[in-house]
Image 1 (spheres, rainbow, N blue to C red):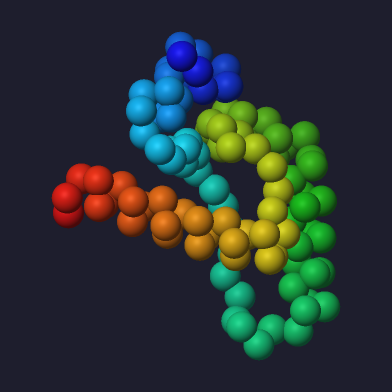
Image 2: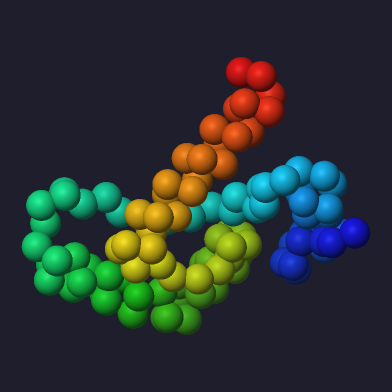
Length: 100
Protein backbone atom coordinates (compact mmCIF):
# COMPACT_ATOMS: atom_id res chain seq x y z
CA UNK A 1 0.00 0.00 0.00
CA UNK A 2 1.23 3.50 -0.80
CA UNK A 3 1.08 6.23 1.81
CA UNK A 4 0.88 10.01 1.59
CA UNK A 5 4.38 11.52 1.57
CA UNK A 6 3.96 14.26 4.19
CA UNK A 7 5.14 14.45 7.80
CA UNK A 8 1.66 15.32 9.13
CA UNK A 9 -0.03 12.47 7.28
CA UNK A 10 2.22 9.52 8.08
CA UNK A 11 0.36 6.23 7.78
CA UNK A 12 -2.45 7.69 5.65
CA UNK A 13 -2.95 5.59 2.51
CA UNK A 14 -3.20 7.28 -0.86
CA UNK A 15 -6.55 7.29 -2.62
CA UNK A 16 -5.14 5.23 -5.46
CA UNK A 17 -3.89 2.52 -3.11
CA UNK A 18 -7.45 2.33 -1.78
CA UNK A 19 -8.80 1.64 -5.26
CA UNK A 20 -9.73 5.11 -6.60
CA UNK A 21 -8.60 5.70 -10.16
CA UNK A 22 -7.69 9.35 -9.46
CA UNK A 23 -5.13 10.98 -7.17
CA UNK A 24 -7.37 12.68 -4.62
CA UNK A 25 -4.55 14.53 -2.81
CA UNK A 26 -6.26 17.89 -2.87
CA UNK A 27 -4.21 19.92 -0.46
CA UNK A 28 -4.91 23.61 -0.22
CA UNK A 29 -3.72 25.83 -3.00
CA UNK A 30 -3.51 29.56 -3.33
CA UNK A 31 -3.89 31.53 -6.50
CA UNK A 32 -5.06 34.79 -7.98
CA UNK A 33 -7.45 35.52 -10.78
CA UNK A 34 -6.71 38.22 -13.32
CA UNK A 35 -8.62 39.53 -16.31
CA UNK A 36 -8.30 37.67 -19.62
CA UNK A 37 -7.07 40.76 -21.43
CA UNK A 38 -4.29 41.60 -18.96
CA UNK A 39 -0.96 42.39 -20.59
CA UNK A 40 1.30 39.31 -20.36
CA UNK A 41 4.14 41.53 -19.10
CA UNK A 42 1.97 42.61 -16.15
CA UNK A 43 1.10 38.98 -15.42
CA UNK A 44 4.80 38.09 -15.41
CA UNK A 45 5.55 40.88 -12.94
CA UNK A 46 2.99 39.40 -10.54
CA UNK A 47 4.19 35.82 -11.08
CA UNK A 48 7.78 36.85 -10.36
CA UNK A 49 6.77 38.78 -7.22
CA UNK A 50 4.75 35.89 -5.81
CA UNK A 51 7.51 33.42 -6.60
CA UNK A 52 10.09 35.54 -4.76
CA UNK A 53 7.76 35.97 -1.78
CA UNK A 54 7.25 32.21 -1.55
CA UNK A 55 11.00 31.67 -1.15
CA UNK A 56 11.14 33.75 2.04
CA UNK A 57 11.71 32.13 5.44
CA UNK A 58 8.53 33.66 6.89
CA UNK A 59 6.34 32.29 4.11
CA UNK A 60 7.95 28.84 4.20
CA UNK A 61 7.42 28.63 7.97
CA UNK A 62 3.77 29.73 7.68
CA UNK A 63 3.25 27.25 4.84
CA UNK A 64 4.56 24.33 6.93
CA UNK A 65 2.72 25.36 10.11
CA UNK A 66 -0.60 25.51 8.25
CA UNK A 67 -0.10 22.34 6.17
CA UNK A 68 -0.04 24.36 2.96
CA UNK A 69 2.87 22.26 1.75
CA UNK A 70 0.98 18.99 1.25
CA UNK A 71 1.13 19.56 -2.48
CA UNK A 72 4.35 21.56 -2.85
CA UNK A 73 5.46 23.65 -5.76
CA UNK A 74 4.88 26.88 -7.59
CA UNK A 75 2.84 27.11 -10.75
CA UNK A 76 3.15 30.02 -13.14
CA UNK A 77 0.17 31.51 -14.92
CA UNK A 78 -0.37 28.93 -17.68
CA UNK A 79 0.38 25.93 -15.46
CA UNK A 80 -2.03 27.21 -12.80
CA UNK A 81 -4.82 27.60 -15.37
CA UNK A 82 -4.25 23.98 -16.42
CA UNK A 83 -4.15 22.88 -12.77
CA UNK A 84 -7.53 24.54 -12.10
CA UNK A 85 -9.02 22.75 -15.09
CA UNK A 86 -7.78 19.48 -13.60
CA UNK A 87 -9.29 20.36 -10.22
CA UNK A 88 -12.66 20.94 -11.87
CA UNK A 89 -12.43 17.53 -13.55
CA UNK A 90 -11.42 15.89 -10.24
CA UNK A 91 -14.31 17.39 -8.30
CA UNK A 92 -16.71 16.41 -11.09
CA UNK A 93 -15.39 12.84 -10.87
CA UNK A 94 -15.95 12.81 -7.10
CA UNK A 95 -19.47 14.20 -7.42
CA UNK A 96 -20.26 11.60 -10.08
CA UNK A 97 -18.87 8.76 -7.94
CA UNK A 98 -21.02 9.92 -5.02
CA UNK A 99 -24.09 10.07 -7.27
CA UNK A 100 -24.83 13.74 -6.63
